[in-house]
Length: 98
Image (cartoon, rainbow, N blue to C red; front, side):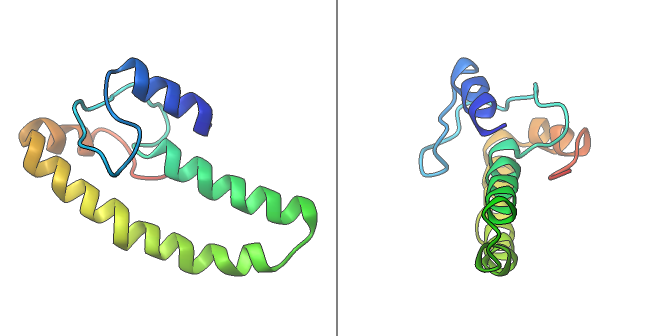
C-alpha cells in the first residue's frame, strides 16, 4: 500500500515527504486519508508477526501514538489552514485511518 500511495501522491503533483509543503489534496484514496501511515504501521505489524518478534509489536503502540499526536493531528491543522473549507469537506468524506 505504501508504494501505491506514494505513486498516487506523485502523480497528483504533491510532495510525498511530510517535511515538504503539500501542494494538493489527493482525493483518490478509497479506504483512508492517510495511506502511507496506515501502510507503514501495517508493515511493521506484519513483519513483527512474520519474524516472530514481540519487540516490533511492543514498539508499535508508542510509535502509533506518536504518529497520531505528533504528526497526523498537526498535519490536519496545517492542511485545514492551507486549504480551508476544501480540506474540511475532504475530512468529512473519509476516514482518517481504517
